[in-house]
Image 1 (cartoon, one colour):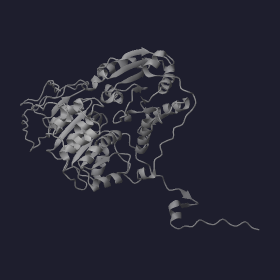
Image 2 (cartoon, rainbow, N blue to C red):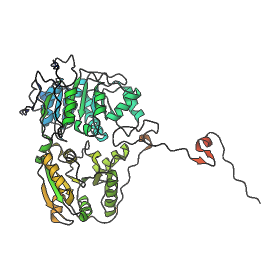
Image 3 (cartoon, rainbow, N blue to C red):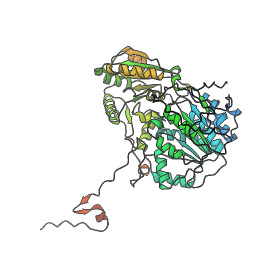
Image 4 (cartoon, one colour):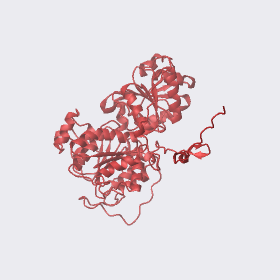
Length: 514
């Protein structure tokens, strides 16, 4: 397998144009000194498209490998790969692992579902194996933007971490912060975290990052889009200054570029299977529908024989569509930030095992959710920008499988949708459809719903998993996290419930006169 050539970048770093950011001693690399004259501020430009060019490393990286056996991985990891049925590396793994295992900083771009988790995970585990973490001081950190992605990364890495004797801890909003603090206090070599919850734990004194030598930013572009950059930069300032940094993302824009230039030292860059290449494994369809036909067309698509994820803009819209579909006979459930994390986990489990066939989701599901065999994603509400489109669509056609992405477009949305597709580098098939059309059925598998209302057992949150009501237990700056409100004590007979429990016996009713 030949390593893909890395194109040069206009305005690439030279001896008299150094990268911004601090130097990190002890890594065997020399950073050019700043020039005395400050460069003129460049005019403000629009975000770079998906095809933005990656910065060129000044030191060439190692060639890609064709098998895991060629890599200096511990035998325990190689044995676990074989047991998991992972026989040969995906392109992003084959390209980045030779460099990351040597301790180089890595900047990798690969589309969602391309195997990025093992690309950074195997290196992180191999380089951390044999070390033991002290209480509250992890040795490796993976930062992710959403709770779902944190759980996916944890699930993917758990068997490999166990094989080399490393302990994993996951810290995300919506779950008990005290239990997470206890897990870190017991000692965890690898920490998978969302920025908001990790910042909370550090502020409480439950976690320190000064021993972290390997740091990964996964889905860095979404962290930038969600407003996490200030928190991420503060967290990166706390890890070992001469440690290894890896940044993986499906798309790159100028916000991510700022992270790269500040925190990565002479990174080896790999652009493998980029987001725009999803056209090769996906079919993209734009279906023009009239306003009065949209609801019926959506219900017919949801009633197809097979699972489907349908994206809408708002939590209220997701709940409303779910109610409509249940009433028409479709086994639907909503997934959004208004649900607690255990509820979201159970909804996903119902979708995986077939109890739910139509998952109605906001963008909370656009990252970090992996469903095997999912072949259709529908944008009921067209996405806001091309990055949202690519990440929504990334729920299908994962790991080389095929899939279809369908977007329902009203007349007034056509021009904006055409512009979005051009920016994403996608040429979709465009069709005008109405409910009951043969083309609608051919593209999506649509069929008429039964009309017999159904009910899906709502995910019940066990008491053991409910977030504590004390301050900070449910807090997180993740957009999908909402702190729980404490209700005022209920008054009973002029006395508070607390007073009653403290010993104020209720007055006995008077016996009726005989």
